Image 1 (cartoon, helix red, strand yellow):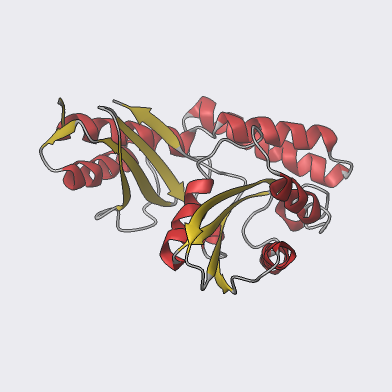
Image 2: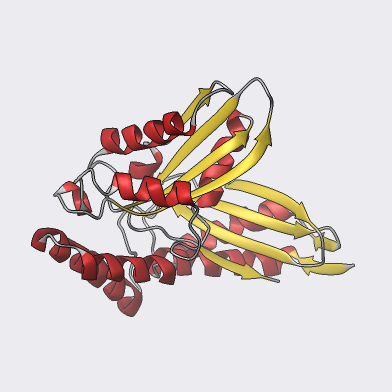
Length: 263
């Protein structure tokens, strides 16, 4: 049995809050650069360049990537052979409070209690991920309970129409997390977890088809036109009941921020 102290967890969570808010994920930065290189619109190319410059300055100067430092969502994968010495919930709450103060992050929410999702997994490790979720994009989240006989084209249409409706409001280019299956609440959790998956490394045919269709909408970076409306569509699935088919969509703006550490 491996013992991890609550104080150690608090310190790591604080560090993750700082890193997530000040350093854009490397996979997102790579895809932004790729989009800039392939974008045909001069205005869109210029806007993508400004987004990339902003991320570089934030990292170099240790400043927040965005003035909306988000509502912190914490994901924990707790090994079944791990023993936590002290209060895990309190450690996470205090760690977030400490981290946001260290990062000089703007207070966008009441940081405690924090939104925490816990999975019990095999092994003796504790994996911690902090996702600061901006609410311009969170507000565009959607859930639809489809009939179990729904065709895949209906689901694709729901997602594409949601992006059309969001337009420029959630700061494109987007990364879209999609959750399919489980229950209504679990599909929504899957959609948010999908945002944690590294983009640009794995793509199913459905994900690729959706990304292609979305990038034909001509919403473009910051809604000013171009073929880069989204950087990626990440889909996570789970078995569900024969009487339903939950589909949830979680938007992320271009500043998709998360940081992970494992003890």
